Amino acid sequence: MNRTRRADEACYVFRVRFRLDAPGVETEPETFETVVRYPAAEPGDDEGRWRFFEEWLWRGELTDAARFREVMETWLSVPVDRVSFSELVVSEAYLEAWTDAVAAELDRYNADSVREVRHNHLGSSIRVRGRD
Image (cartoon, rainbow, N blue to C red; front, side):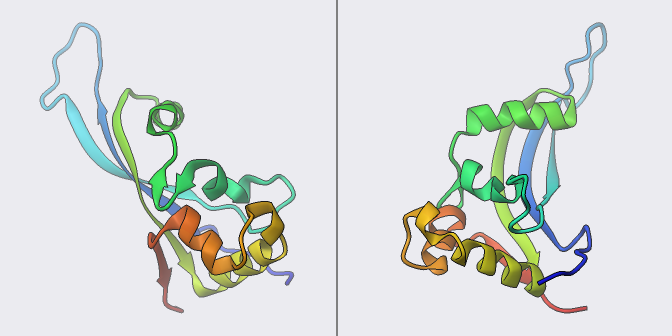
C-alpha cells in the first residue's frame, strides 16, 4: 500500500511527571505532570523506528521505565521523575498498515497471530480514532 500518512495518524501517549531544577531560584510547584505524544513511524519503514513498541513495550507497560525516563529527559530537556505508557492512538488506516507489517514478520515476534503480537506488546492500550 503506497500512501502518504498524516503526521497525526498515530502516536504513542505517555504520562510524565517532571521537575524544574533551576539553580538559584525556587519554583512552586516543583513538579508538573503532562502528556507527551510521540509520533509513530510508518509501519514497515526501512529504518525500523516503527518497531518502537517492540523495543519499549510489553503488555502495555514500559519494559524498562528507568531507562525510558532517560530517553524522555532527552526529549524534554528536564529531569523526569516518572513516566508511564498510556496508549497507542491510531487511525483505522494506520492500524491496517501496522497489522499488515506485523503479519509479514510474524516469525520475528515468535507469535502465531498479529493479535498475539498486539496483546504481547500493547496489551489493551490501543485506541483507534474514527474516520474524519
